[in-house]
Image 1 (cartoon, rainbow, N blue to C red):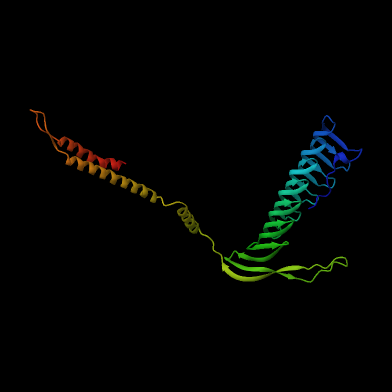
Image 2: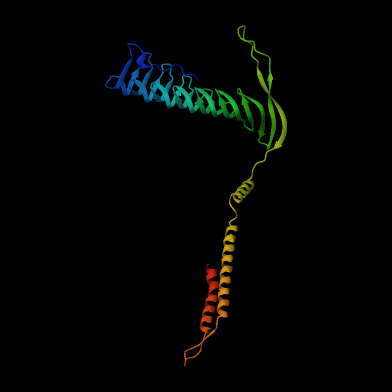
Length: 309
């Protein structure tokens, strides 16, 4: 996984700077697009800025490795692909000559890791796939090792739990495709210490051992369960649509009652008033029947207006 050799800076090679063809600036520094052969026979073709590799370029090492990607002041920085002499390959983000950010590494044995990197090592969330078995680890990494919550997914079952120092440790569970899961925990068992010589103290070899616990059935949600959950969620978030018209109907009914009461009071007052008037001499007595008829007509039309409202 290491970079076999590092690019040398053309400006630090002494009196002999190799060969160069390309643009230069007013200070005679390599600037713009150019092609260079370094003193160690490495080659670079791409963009320069004031004498430094800067921008998109291709660097070919004498050992067969090559980098195709972005540079920033002579350092790999941005998006780029590094192909190693053994055939392994990294495609992704670089920061200050280091694999950093999101990227995918394809190993020579067929294994792959796709996820986050920091300082050239797997660090953060990522997925490692073992080519020989098809097993996948999906979870957290720290300085190149599995650390924190993760899932180790096999062909017909998976382990879900916590990892520490690249090993499962503590409480977790095995989930089987047949419809059950077994709860338990991994207990650290200390093996015989390995003797590394007189200068170093022997180190303990910790082996995690699975302690099985309760076996329970897996509850798989059906389409009906999901629909019921969605319906219950909608009812909780919003009041039933039928309640809203009922409220407005109650308000309308109260307004109608108020209008009818006011109209009834008006009619009673009019009935108490004299229904005859004294006509001028020689004239006929005028009844209030016209007014009553007008009131009756307006009273009959009122319900129609209320229904319209």
